[in-house]
Length: 429
Image (tube, rainbow, N blue to C red; front, top):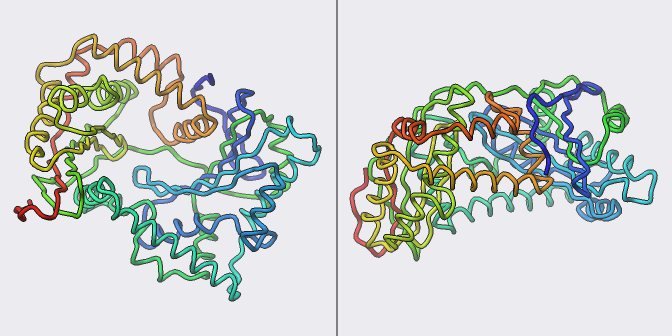
């Protein structure tokens, strides 16, 4: 398993900040080019649409040419995804290709990087009829992604919850943007968005695999000389979450969804982050968690139950799928678990089980090249990072009292229920 280092080395090569996680663990190499900018209504949908468009270039102007080139590169894959992180919108452009040392072609690595250079620096925006038609299909694809949110009860509920909690915060926008804005974007606007990203975004290239610095330098020296802004770490600031109260909505769903929300304390130290991480695991992660054992197993109220946590935006929540007639009872029991941890504390056995689960999940993530690359990047964003040995030492020192003190700082922000339409309309708050 890969080791997690602290203060990873970032080198600037030809004007581009690069971080390397050198390892012989995988038979692939992953290169990710990350673009980070503040979330803005005017740009978020355009950036998302560019991620959909990413890959077509002057050298490979059609989907057929693009796919043929990937096939020629021994099944390499190229993709772009978007995410929200704190107050920022991030576009990840990722190329994964076989380890060149396993390919009997001396030019293979040069070909791979030449392909990456073409897609990143020569995207095509010429408004020909064929390209306009292709662009319209990409717009339709993005619109369908918005529509798919309204087809899944959990997505419907969570989108509504985030809209309400962050009603005064740009975080309320979905990572893929705003549906109504998609059709207002044309190829010229997409080109302007790309040009702005290349000049104004904070950027970082993360590389994971059996690669040496001299090879990276050789390849990047062939790229246009850059002068990009390096990715900066977050400065955590207090989020102003609105209160959900006791919100009830109705939709055409087969199973009710219940959500309980909490505002987390502002994290100001490495120790606080580790304690919060472990407290969250005890509360809502895996089959040993309070919510799973007390709500799903013992009370048998939930078909499914799980939690999620966003440290940068100070939000923890849990979602349960239940029978509509059981929502009140389920929410009360879900709320009681956090209260019990804050008032009566936790046992050493719970802490030990959570530690094992947390360690197991980390090992699983580090067994995949995507997981290693993702962790390497995210560690450049957080203001508080630890080496693996430091993290293990800090985890080992956590006591039940520390968990209890952390849970006492959670602030209840209300609940949300998504119920079947046929039920009588109840007042919402």
